[in-house]
Length: 131
Image: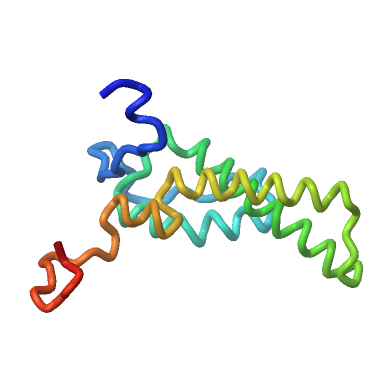
C-alpha cells in the first residue's frame, strides 16, 4: 500500500517477543498522580504483553500527562470550581496528549479492539449481525 492508502490506518497491536514480564516500579520523579496512573495501567499492559523496555518513556509520558490533568483538576476543586483560564487550556492539552498516548498503548476501547482484548474465541452463530 502507498503512504496515502495507509493514512488513518493504525497497525494491529500484538504481543511482543521482548515484552516485559513484570512491571517496573514507577519512576521516582513522577508526581503522585502520575505514579497512581502508572500503578493502575501497568498490570494491564504487562498482561497483554505489548510493553517492552523501549516503550517505557512513552508510558511515562502518558502517565505524566494523565497525572497533570488530575493535578489541575485538584487545583480547580480546591479553588471552589474556579480555574485560571491558562490552566484550563493547559489541562485540555494534557487531556489530548494523554488520549493520544493511551491509544498507542491499547488503553482505549478502540485500541483494545485492535489487540483483540475481550473478543470472543468463536463467533456467535445466533448473532444476526455476524457477517
